[in-house]
Length: 315
Image (tube, rainbow, N blue to C red; front, side, top):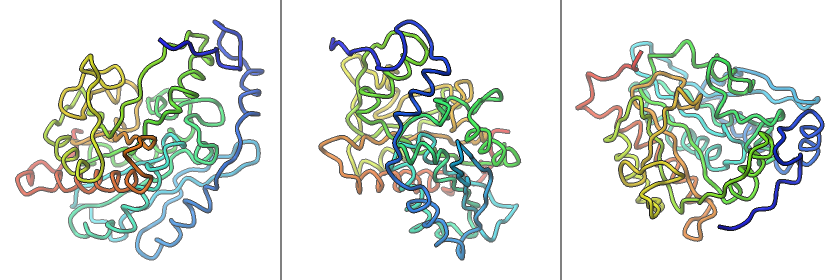
């Protein structure tokens, strides 16, 4: 096992306090622009989709509107598909894949399904290419009723009126090498716990909901993405990131219990994608295309004729 030096903030065995949090914030450098990369692309879609500002983040004078795209001709008789990306701001293809899907395919479903797309849930972290928000909180563990991340609370407020009416919810993520070099060591240091190294899967995989498994739905997505990029194999223990592989490229988590984004909608069909952008076998364009393929396959499966009578969420 490789020995990883302790994270350079904090004291081993002691959780962070305000001093350590301030030190961590001081290390975060703005590396890209949410307004240039995301808001401007959303603005170009205003003639085709309704744009909703569902929340507003202000961190030390930096303001970020939280934006979602919604079907213009909303039809209350149709099912709803929810697409979320950028819950972890560093996961680039989640953001750009969601936007690329809307730009190229969002209107393909007119009259068949209502779309709600929140492409960048955590804009401050998007700019810093980080997993956490300004308060060193992971938004994707904050979607429970007691969640502390305002990014997560805002999305919950947006989705709450739709709960139980959403047919399909796909949440677009990445697993990167920095999970092991930065984010998991930082998490251990923040919580005053020892860091135990893990492994990064080489390839695309999905996280199904162990409380509502939909194996055929996951398989349809895997088959579509396999045409774009490679699927992560199980490790020597038959696992991916410590969880048993239940089908090629698929593991399961209790999504709602863990406060994960894909558990907020009560949808019949839910999944979390995980792309591996650091693979020598994948390019950024492939990663974005894999996310688009996943969204299209997810909606296509949910709308297939043999599921005509199963168009409502779980309630």
